[in-house]
Structure formats: structure tokens, C-alpha cells
Length: 170
Image (tube, rainbow, N blue to C red; front, top):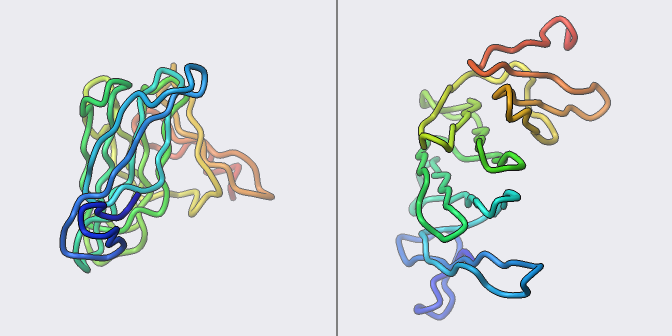
């Protein structure tokens, strides 16, 4: 919830006041983790319970932060960017997270970031050759990202961020 429950639920663009989140286990029918973070949105969970939240950041700056947590709620990675986050993704088994940013006058504008969650570090930051896909997927064993463009197909980025399917997209 992108609102501070202690301040009568004041949410959205604001100067402060953390929002709240929870991780719910459907099989066990129980809440596993509860927490607070500045402006949580777009939550995703992997099969192993690793989960991520986009944070829209306080104030009016074009910026965001991807926060990734273990199934017990411990921070794995925190990736601040100086552009708005358009889309994030989390691999099926929680090995990788991804950020795609909007256009911005900063170095982080219109970039694709791959975060290796084993080490909690950004593996690469590249200009996305496949444009603005409808969604992203992963081939975890190879460390590849797949961009899905409706009506055009699937296009791969290698483990180093190189765009593999340039000829196919042309």
C-alpha cells in the first residue's frame, strides 16, 4: 500500500511516510512477511519466496528504487535509479531481477538493468535494443533475459547485456 497508515492513509506523491507491504503464502493461507518501505508498488514473488517491490521514491524527482527481499523479509538488493521505473521483473526461481526505466535526462534514463540476486549486484545496465516490451522473461541457467514484443516475438539479451536477436528484430 503506497500510503502511510499512521497519517490517515496519505498516499501517492508525498514528502515522507512509509507505506506497507506483505508477502502472503497461498498454500499455507498465511501472511509470511509484513514490512514498511517508502512507496511500495508492483510487487512480484518468485517460486522460492524471494520478492521485489518498486519504490516510486518521495518528492518530484524522476527516480525509483527496486527493493528485493528474501522469503523471510531480509533485504537482498536495493537498486536506486535516476529515472522512473516502467517495468520490473523477477525470474521464476529468484536468481535475477530486472528494471526497465523510462526516458530521463540522466544516465539511467531508458535503460535495462539486470540484477544478479546471488550477489545482490547489478550485472549490467544497457540501452534496450528491443524497445519497450510487453513483458520480460528469463532463462536463469544461462543468465539471459527475454523481451516479449506482442505481434513480433521473443528477443534475447545475453548474460552480459548484449542483444542477441538483432537480426531477428530487424
